[in-house]
Length: 145
Image 1 (tube, rainbow, N blue to C red):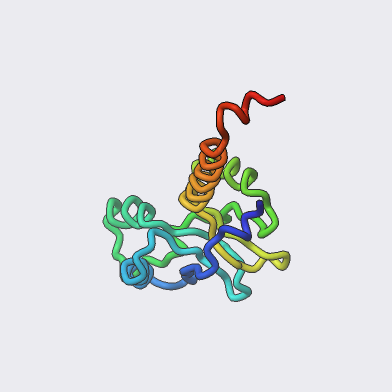
Image 2: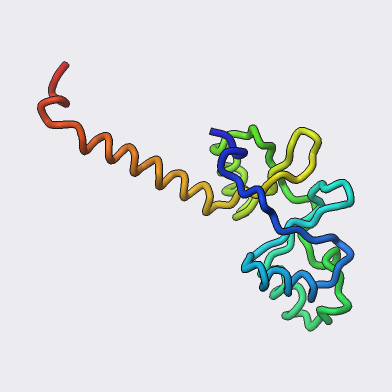
């Protein structure tokens, strides 16, 4: 199965020139923990998370109104394409200790976001289906050659 089948398509975004305060207010209003930073061509150029705001702004005593997202975002985020197998996305997340990956189309434009929670939800559903199949099997049916 591909990332494109499980990713969230309605992605909250930010521009790199907006203030940290504006981004934080959007994150709060939308109840999200991250924003994908995109350029004018809608290509991902960064990621900013609630942790970034805490560690890179609040802890350093920066002014949230004056500080731009470009100053605190993680630049050049790893991305996956819609057709990327879920297993590959999970490998990238584990290798880079990411919880989120922007999903891009063939043109490189942002089309979605896949999260570790999305992958875990899929795996949980798959395990439920396997369990259901196994529970339907009787010991007699399992003993048949």
